[in-house]
Image (cartoon, rainbow, N blue to C red; front, side, top):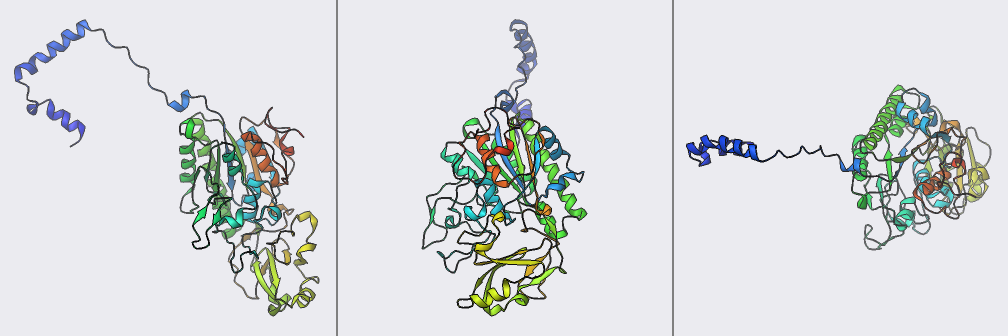
Length: 447
């Protein structure tokens, strides 16, 4: 029985009150009303979030696979409004323009060659027989560099991550030999979520808003948020397909929900919205079969798609080099030490001894006739226009600065450090120079 039903029963026959008392009750109440002044009408309570003077929160948003020129398709009013109030640019990803290397660069300020996350698939001689994949959370693979949330947590700044490659890893920890998931030590964000594609975009935004809605003592000051649907659409349909444009429009509405939610609680926020890479059109008709370039008996493939990385079978190095390193159409191969310096790639021990870059739009496959299902892909030369990535920043820390000249994504981590009040860091591959003219006073670190 609900409370209303119980109240109705108490006022009738089941009340236990004689009829004469019920009849006199209105008179008694009238007399009381004549002698007791009415209580003042209380003002409607306002939400605590509106009464509180809130310090800005910094939210780093990744929209995986959002090519820079998607912003020009006329379907992104919310992102364009943020760009108009702040700044935007076509940002150069680091090479290779793959998801995990670039997400780790965005939060460490180190290129993949130095961060330790050199590819989506890796091997390491210290762990023979093991392969890093995009599901690997063993700190061994990630401990070569420190992400922003770890630096912030060490400085007493509370952080939360709604998905980000590596954010579920106890960075600095050690995996026990006898049980792969027994990790000792290490640092994670104070709040974090294990990546799950089934968590839809609205749920991700609502989780972030719930974190920010918390009391000040347990409210994160730095949050990451990750969306994968545009990357999925780009792979499945290709960057030029209307269904990819529809995915762009849907993400823009989601960004609008985030902005409206923050506004509703009067929470100022510095939004730094980025992509890890762009997307290029690919086709089953534009492939290079590695077994047509060299004898498969001479090599082992580590990874093959928009680039190829290989290791020679011991004793077969000369034969492999003779076949692989000569000119070929649509593919250029090097010893790792000879990879062009402009790519900043080739010194890390996790990079295999031989590396091949594909012409944009072409794919390396292990053997002729390999099935190709994607219509879009990335990982190409980071200078290719198709690989240019989204960058939009807006909030109280930013002046309206319009379009910035293109810059390398290693500069994003130094920018976020400024927004969080962290020191500039030492030994990083980037700095905040591209943003100094648009940051309000006390945000940037002078040279």
